[in-house]
Every structure is written in C-alpha cells, then in structure tokens.
Length: 208
Image (cartoon, rainbow, N blue to C red; front, side):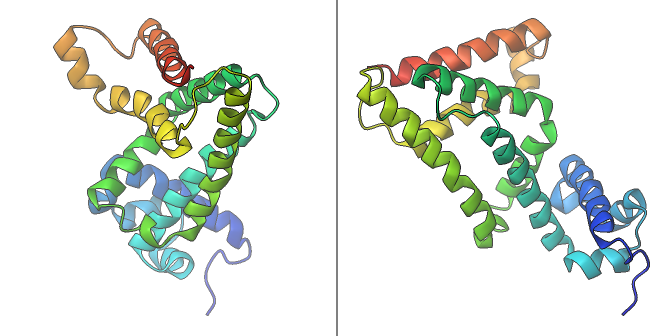
C-alpha cells in the first residue's frame, strides 16, 4: 500500500506524534479528535492509522514518548558521582522544574489516570525505562546510608512517588489553591519558594 508521505516515514511519524501530544494534552483521550491531529500534522487520517493503528494506540505512543523524554532528561543529570544530599536535591529540583516547564506531561497523566492506567498496563517499554531511575535512586540512598547521612530502609519507589507528588499536587491544584489561600501560586517567586520547599521536605524525610 502506498501512503502519501512515506518517503520520510520517521518525519511523518514525528509530526503525527507531536500533533497528537498537543491534542491529547488539551482535550484528553475522550475529547481528542483524529481530524484535528491529522490537520495539525499535515497528514491524512489514513496515514495516521497506517502508522499507529488506532486513536488509543496513538495515545499510548504519546504516553511512552512523554515518559521517555523525562527519563532521558533525568539521565543527563549525572547523579551517580554527586554527594548523596546534593544528588537528591538535584533530582527533586529537576522533577519540579520539568513539571513546571512541561504542563502537557501532567495533563497526559491525568487523562491516563481517568482511564485507570489501562493503556500503560501493557507497555513493557514504560516499565523498562523506569528501572534505571530506581537503580540510580537506590544507589543514592545506599551511599547516603553508608556515609551516615540518610536513615536506613527507605523504599526508592515510595521516595520517588513522594518527590513527584510534592510538585504534582501543587501544580494540578494550582487554581483552587490560589483561590483558597489568596496567593498567585504560579508567580515566579511562589514557584521558586516551592522548589526550595520540595527539596527541603524530601531531604528532611530521608535524614538520619
């Protein structure tokens, strides 16, 4: 079958994936429309189905790519040789900054959680890409224990959930919290204060 645009399939796939990321982030899986994705990517619907099979499989591809980007960015932090406290602070600060700079990541996660994670359930790719993160975090904790800085027995999975949760709740509830407390929680000063708070909270939690 000849597909228009097949001379550069990787570029076409990338355009579709980028357009779908914006569509799913704005409207969620249920509200996203294939017609709009096709128009934004300058591809026809037949091409989209040829490369991704269905809207749900395209949504999974978007989720996988979104996780891949944050995990790749984490690897560039080079945490392995840092002082354990500095390494952990850098990871917490990075996670917060990534959430602030990539709101589409959070909205995609919100959409998948509405579907109870059913699309990620069958994704070995997502599970595999999280393994190095947990290995790195476990190594940071082990170094901290050996040096007498961190308490023993901290579960790296629980710790990472706490790191992500410190920023996730703040940002996903920023509008209601701003109204309730009469603060602009997205003002630069408020974001900087929250970054320090997140790191201080996590470091205090692991301290021996």
